[in-house]
Image (tube, rainbow, N blue to C red; front, side, top):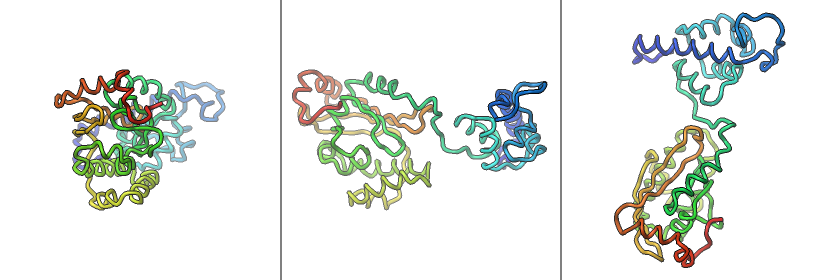
Length: 294
């Protein structure tokens, strides 16, 4: 149903879009795809309304009213059944919720978009000589470029979860000039990420591990602060070049809502850009004090 704040014109437009969307999705599903015999004459391509209703387990009249854009009561369970029959993608399913006047489910990656790692690897490698890495929804490290290894200390022999590593990796912590000021922000951003999926046990597992390994994390987590992911300043002391000042920016890819790209941009201070360029040069690599990324 429409919210009280929705105007009559807005509701009329939304329901008109719902009607057109459902008709177009129904027309593209072949009877054979839905397990129905493909025989007989059909005036229009795709499934009939009656067939969608039966396959979705809803009343024929109710589905007809839904597709006609009538202002009727709908539930997430029924919309999910219709989405299944119409073979909607995750993005189309969210669109159906919005057009029906319901809060959409959390974004999901479509199966055809899950194999994007080669392209994302090219993206963060092209960001060289500046650090960049990619995390999944739980902040587990997925990919990182060589600069992230040299500057941030990302390497295979530490925790592959960025939140846990922030609190437990002595190398990373020793380089952060204002670690104590940044820590509350990091925890608040992770709680914000958790709030998008409150029933997800994956987030609980990360919180439990971080709490068991770091009393500082446990204290900050109990504050229950929430901040959206965005930008923050990092000031570091690197053993080879001294002070580095960068701006860390979290980016989302609509096709892969389960991933977060973190790109570090040098700020004008401390000649950071030139220092980063030197660190990834052959001379700078020879001076590295730990293994580089593979």
